[in-house]
Image 1: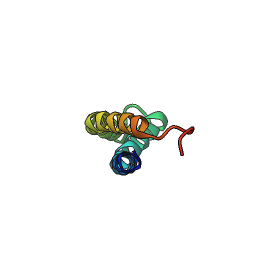
Image 2 (image 1 turned 45 degrees about the vertical axis):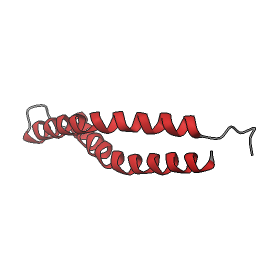
Image 3 (image 1 turned 180 degrees about the vertical axis):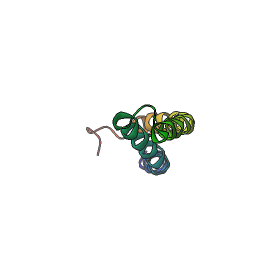
Length: 81
């Protein structure tokens, strides 16, 4: 059980390290969209950046959900140990 848990924890950490930069790009684009004139080039670029980030995040999110589910399933119960 511990080996399986350790593997699923490592897999979760890998997904987190891959997911975070994509998520940070999306958040940065959202901040620009919230604070910039809709008719500006900066707004248009942020919208395009968010579109790319959302497209990239979609498969990352699916992998993240699977990694979280696996980690949760493999996690030892608090009563054990």
